[in-house]
Image (cartoon, rainbow, N blue to C red; front, side):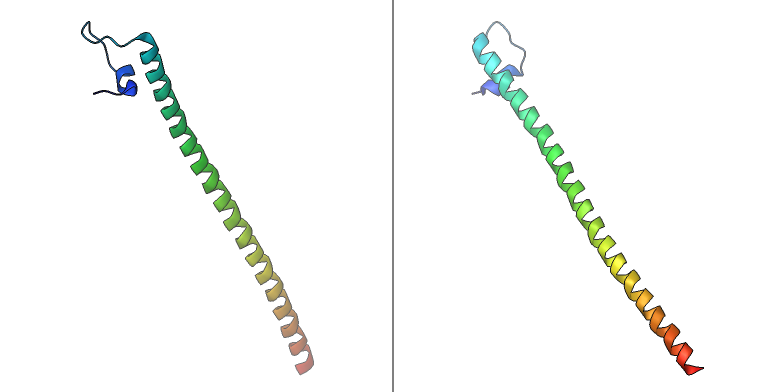
Length: 85
């Protein structure tokens, strides 16, 4: 037994006699399935973009922290070299 979705996707002969309403409802179901598939890829792209943005921000914070740390260490080295002379 075929579902309405399958009926809407087949070529009919005179032996098959689904009603126009059944064909239309099957085609609407196929359209809904295709729309859900498109939305799935879109949400996957949105999730991926937010993940990359989050990683970028974490790396920026780490880089800033290390830059400040390096600057502080340079200052300590400069002072230590100045006192040793």
